[in-house]
Image 1 (cartoon, rainbow over the protein chains, first blue to last red):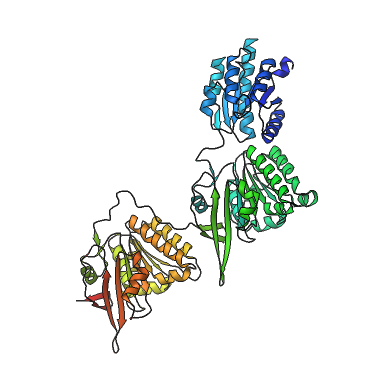
Image 2 (image 1 turned 45 degrees about the vertical axis):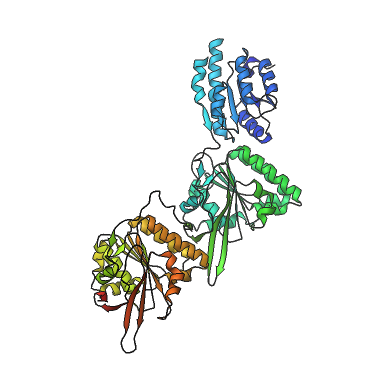
Length: 134
Length: 475
């Protein structure tokens, strides 16, 4: 379990593509985040309910629990409903992501500047929420 | 909470697949052929023999796109050393030295490839993506990397790795290579490519003809066929193949006759020729074709209709003298929209002649066109089928745009077979006029209307005389 301070910078990423993972890992770590990768939706849900994360990034096309179902379950779960979710997918599914409760949607491919700007915006909002709650 | 997150729901970006998301090729005509340019975030192959223009095409593209916060990365491999590529690049007008090293980054990986093997390409690319975040990656030549691979299995693995990397990352890639058409079916890089374009060169006597062709462009319409181009100091000067326009819905030919500029001929045609029609004027040398064509164009200028006279035989000075001999104030005619254009069919491809003609027609809002003569265009065409396709498309464009045209067609002798003329060229035209020239002691010229569309024309053979005022019909 991470400390509260470091948990604020943990990004949970549900992604199977090795190249996308490499790019996300490099960009997020360069921006000062800690990255936790999982391979499927169930692992993502288990991690998110047991650990604090500043943001959850998920592809839609992941095994066991797809990214949109994951998003809905995170929203329904009291422990995770306030954690922002970024759906980052090869599918053009912005509307479906929003309907599933995602905080933001980005379509692949990976462009570092856009990805990091979106992650930063979402985690800043989360920082503000945590400050209000505590 | 929800009120705080709500604004972030607007953080919706689609970086991958918007239909209008295109990358300019740096060449307006090539973009037209490509249906707007290359799709962004795609992998493309630019193939062709050495010297076919691949590198110039790629360099024109990168300098045109070199702007913004992400650079363009140009890898040279084992085809040409970087110093050679850059040395020749400086001769082109699109080259901008101020962009080198910041917006356009050249990197020579030939030495690394030769020492460490082709597998080094993937880590080199990964590192470049991490450190430079390039929006365009060019590998020149990828075929050279391909040739370093010892087996088909190795080649497939490399292409798979490359595709996975370039697909994950938002970049538009161009793999250049000295591939042949047969390679398309054999090599794995062609299966994964989103776009394949070919530059080719064909030797024709003392000159070369170059062609650009799109083989594949996923998710996009493009203009099929071979499109001619030339290499100039501005880069590639491309001439998209002329195709027949689709007839607009509800199209009806205009119900208006216009004067040919020769009163007697207008009477033979029952009041002139229909606007928007094409007239084939056939006859041997000296029969009066050029004079009739000039009178038609000059009459257009006199009526305030911009008129284009395209000729391939007489240079501008010769033509001006001919016009002045008709008692016409050339400068005044030009001020009223007469354009005299000379093109040498020996030096040019038919594609460039036709594209130039169309640019003039569009820019000058041309209403009348004379082409003097079709035979010269034929000599510029290396492929007779291509010539026929072009001419057919040309007259269809004239019809849709209601441009009235005369096409001069030189026959070899007076004994020309009427049927022969009709078979050879009349599919192009609404009207066919046949001129003859002969006589033993004095020259005698005649004109005969073989065909008109929608007119009960004069069926008689009429004598033609050429005076200081031009052609007159003896009645």
